[in-house]
Image (tube, rainbow, N blue to C red; front, side, top):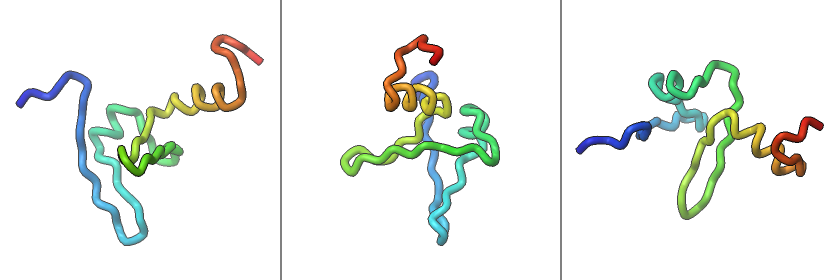
Length: 72
């Protein structure tokens, strides 16, 4: 089966301390570096998602009522 372009799937094992290791290919593709903070979103029906790092800016803009292109 061919995978759709730009779509990926990985597995990770949860350690005894509840930590997971993000696979190297995923870290490389998404530019995840040591010390980065990642946002985890959970839905009991759909699972856990880790949005791209840039989603922080958009999310905070929405949360704090900033309009797109607003510099203040």
